[in-house]
Structure formats: structure tokens, C-alpha cells
Length: 488
Image (tube, rainbow, N blue to C red; front, side):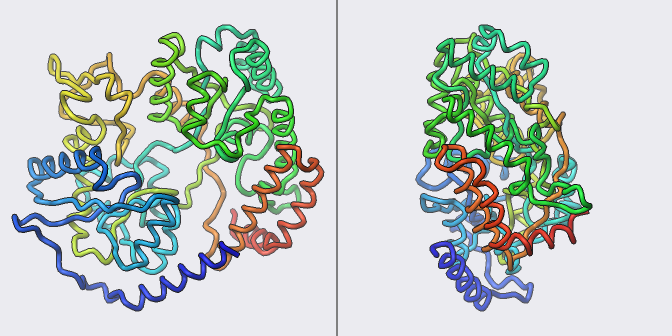
């Protein structure tokens, strides 16, 4: 009921906003200019706001770089997004009619785009000086399908990691690395706990999504829509493969190998449990997040605790996850109502230039990097705290070469990205039509409830069959029919 009320409220706000907005394609609002002639660019970005000293410092530095290298005279107005669910709070802001020039979305962007409130980025990118040359393959495909969001980052998957000194103490390590079957993973978790290296084998935060990056494909959950053996498709979460996987998770939970507090665990507590060796294995986003985990783990436990990236489990298949190419799940957009669309894109393009990447990727000279012998040398502070707000291209081109002694990513961070790239496969999912969204959300919540109850032993695994019946009755019949008409 709460979800239904929320959807109805957003729908009403959308109607009001569309009624009030200028949909003629002409810019109805004059650009805001400061007294000293700077164009005000309003930006909404998760975790950034005027109350954050780090945010203010970053955008001040970006203003200086834009003036120096592009003669763009801008003044950033950083929007303070209320605490809580970012997508929900952002949409309330947008539906109030207060639409920033540049908007970071992390979900719930489709209804905004459907109102014509987001700019098609295709012509801008085609005419760009730098951005068009740093796109990944999946960026291009996603833009063709949904041209409103841009997120030039490596594939955003999660990988499991373990302390290297733990790995070297376990007799099961060699088998796991050579042949990472589900059974070898279980034996690995068991030995860690039995030897007292950790209280439990693996921890995740809130649900099993992170765990699925290890085990989904091994059980045959290889894509969103699985072939049913009769020429059609079945949704992965109502498949026999899913039932088998949940039964395995329930065994891990019962044996104390899966963190028994995972359902209520927040991400920060999860990370602390790993640093303090309550959990033997943690799952984190490849690249910079694994870098941060590595730095923190070594700071707490010493250099011998450097992380090792573990392979995905193997079985029916292997790999961390299939990659959706329907659209960017998160990214930057430009408001179609903005009077500053051209300048907004110039800023995004500048951030793809050597000068822009120097700031966004590396941080501040003298703090996060130094210039030594005409090379960029990164500092420990870079590895422990800096992150790129915008682009992370595969081939970074800077005006000064980087020292080979201080690469952008630590060995574990780079290994995690390589592992994801090496196991890349495109998913066969599709964007659920707007008229099915509320049903789909309810069906996903139904799955989460049953999955949690099965794993924690509140209901037997056979209750999965009851869930499947309820799922189809709740709208699964219609969406499965749509999938069989859509998936190629």
C-alpha cells in the first residue's frame, strides 16, 4: 500500500510538472549569472552538497580548471539532497520543479525521461572533443538504447576478496583457485572458520545480491531470462536453478558460513567486520572500491593482509554476472529545461580531457599526487580517500606520464577490474514498460521476502514452489509473455 501511494503521488507530481513546464523545446528560463559574470551551473550529485567541505573544495577546483583551460566562467551551485533514499529524494526535488542543469541519477530516472525532462546526449557526444573517444563498448550500446544517461566507468560488478595471508594458511586455497566449484568454496569457508581466522566465511549487506556475483552463474542463473527447454524463456528468479542456489545459501547460513546478521547489516558495518576479521571474505565493486578495501585492510592488519581477488564459482557456467546493456543503471544527465545545456555538456567533455582527468582522476597536487622527475607520483592519501566523481576511461591520457611505481589502481584493484572484463557477457534483459513497473516492484519484493525466509530457515526450501505460483499470479504471467515476445 505504501508503495502504491508513493507511485500515485509521483504520478500526480509528474502531471503537475508537465503541465507547468515549457515543452516547446525553447529555453523558457534565462541563465542565472552572478554579479561577477559567472554562469551558475546547478548540479545534483549523490553525497555532494554545500555542507560538505570536500564537495565545495572539489567544485571550486573544477571552476578554476574550467576557467584556466577552457575559458569557461562558471559558478557551481551544489544542491543539498535530503538524507535517505537518494533516488526518492532526488525525484521529489525534480517534481517540485527545481531541476538542476546536471543531474546524477541512481535509479528512478526513467519516469523523468518519459516526461521529456532529460536531454538526448547523442548529438552532443557525436560532436564532442574528448568524450566520444573514451566510451567503453557497453556505453555505446546503452546510449543507443537510452540516450539520457552517461557513465563512463568500467563494468560495475562486484568480486569477492580475501586477505592474502589467510589464503596462504588454508589447505583448501589451491583447490579453490584452480577449480572454484561450489563445493570448493564451501570447503574454503569451512576451513577459515574451523581454523579461527574468521567467525564466518562471507558477509554481505542487506540481501543476497552481492553473494549472487559469486554463485549465480555456477548454478545456471546466467542471464535475466533463461531458456526453458521448450523454446521459450523463464525469469531467472523463478527458475529451478534459483531454487537450487537458495538451498545452497540456506546451508551456508545454517552452518554459520554466511553471516547470520546479513539481512540487517549496513554496508559500513559489513566492511568493519571484514577489517576486524569477523568475516573471511567480502564482496566489493571492482576497481576503486577494492582499492579502498585493500588500503584499509593493510592499515588495520599489516602489509601481509593485502587482498587477493577470488574467482567466481564455476559449475553450469562461470563469471561474476551478465551485464545489462539496456541502459546505464546510474549516471549523469542534462536537464532538457536547462538554459545552460551547451555549457553543461562542455563541462562533461572537459572532464574527459587530459586537464580534466588530471583533477577528477588524481585529486589535488601536493595532496594526492606530486610531480617528480616529470612524472606523476601518487600519494598514500590518493589510495586511501580519492575517487573519481565522473569518468574512468580504460585508456587514461594525461599531459604528464604516471610513474609505474604508483599506478591508478593497486594490484588487487586492477586485478578485480581485469577479472570482470575477462568474464564479460551481455545480459538479455529489457526495460520493463511503465505500466508494469508497480507490479514488477511488488514481484521483486515478493522474491526478496521468500528468499530471506528460505535462507534463514523460517520456511523450507520447498516453499519456493509456492513463491513461484504467487509470482506468476502477481503479474508474472503477463511479463513472462512480454519477455518471450521481446527477448531475442
